[in-house]
Length: 485
Image (cartoon, rainbow, N blue to C red; front, side, top):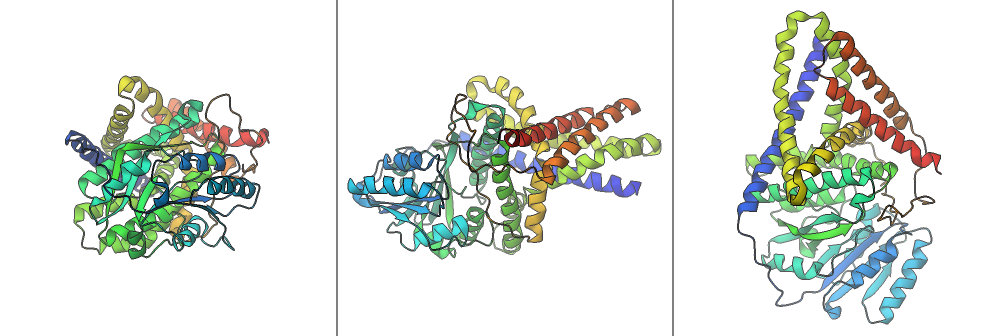
C-alpha cells in the first residue's frame, strides 16, 4: 500500500511537471513572437456583409448594455446585420424587444430571434441564427462583453488570406479591481490571452476560439460541420474540427475586447465547471482524430497538452491528498530517503510555471511587473488549489461522458466597488456537498501543517499552507452569497 501511494504521488507530480514544461515551451514561443516585427494595421478596401450574433439567456442586468455597445461598432450600416439570439424566459425578453424596436426604427438591420425550444443551448442558438444569417462573416459576443467600436475594422483585414477561418481577440476586463476574486481571474486570463494563445499561434499549432469576441468566416463553420452541442464547450470543439480541416486561425493580442469578470464564487464555479468539463468532453471526442491526423508530432504534442489541460486539477487534487500520507511514509521508512530526495526535481515544473506567469505579468503590467507578480501569483496558486475539487468533478464527468445541462455564468453589471450584486436573481444559492468537502479539505491541510511540525519535516509546509488557505477561501466565498440571500 505504501508503494502504491508513493508511485501514484510521483506519477501525478511528474505529469504536472510535464504540463508545466509545456507552458514553458509556449512562453519561449511567445517571447520569440514578440521579437518579430509588428504587422502594419491594414485597412479594408471592400466591406463584406457581416452578421453579429448575440446569444443570450436571461441576461436582465447586461443585455441592454451589450446591444447599445454593438450599435456603436463602426461599420457601414447597409453591410451589417445584428442577431439577438434570445433563449430567455424572463424580463430579458421585453428589454430586448424594446431595444430592437428602437434601433430597427432608426434603420439598423437588427432582429430579435427566439427559437421554439432551447435544444443545444448556446451552440443550438448559434446554429439556428447562422441558418438565417446574411453575413459572409459572423462575429460573436456574449452578454458580458462591451465590444470596441473599432472591432470589425481591425479584425476583418486579417481575412485577406482566404484560408483564414477565424480571428480571435484578447479579452480585457471592465472590473479587475473590484476585489481579490476579480484580480485573480484577471491574472489567470491575461496569461491565457497573452502567452498561451500567441505562443501556440507562433508555433504554428492549433489555437481556439474562446466562445466570444471573435469573427468566423461562415464557410469555415459550414466546412467544419457546423456547431455541435454534444460537448458544453462548442467553441473548442469547432475550433479543432475546423483546424483539422486545414483552416488557419489568427490571434490578435493587440485588439482588446472588454468584458465583465464574475464577482462571486458561484458564478466563477459555473464558468469553471463548463470550461473544464467541456474541455474533457472535447478531448474525449477529438483526441483520437488529432493523433491520427497528418499534422506534425510537435503540433500533436501541444494539442494533447491543450485538450488535456483541465486534467491538471484532478492530478493536483490527487497529489495534494496523498501528500500528507507521504509525510508519514517518509518518517517511518528512512531507507527510502533517496526516493523522496529525487522528488525535488519537480521544482523545475514550479519554476517553469512561475516563468510563464511572470512573462504574462510583464506583458500586461509592464509599469509595475514585480509588484503585480509578487502580489498576485501566490493568490492565484492558492485559489487554483482551492478550486481543485470542484474542477476535478467537472473533469471526471467529462471523461466519463456524464451529460448535464449547459450551466450559464450569472452576469451582474458590477464594475466598481460601489456596485452591489445583492438581489441578483440568477445566483445559485444552494449549499452543495462539494462546498462542504472544500471546508473539510481546508481542515485536512491544516492537519498537514500540524503533521509537518510534529514530524519536523518542513518540506511540504508551504504547499499545505497554500492548500489550506485556498480551500478555506473558496469555501468561505461559496457560503457568503447563501448567507446574503
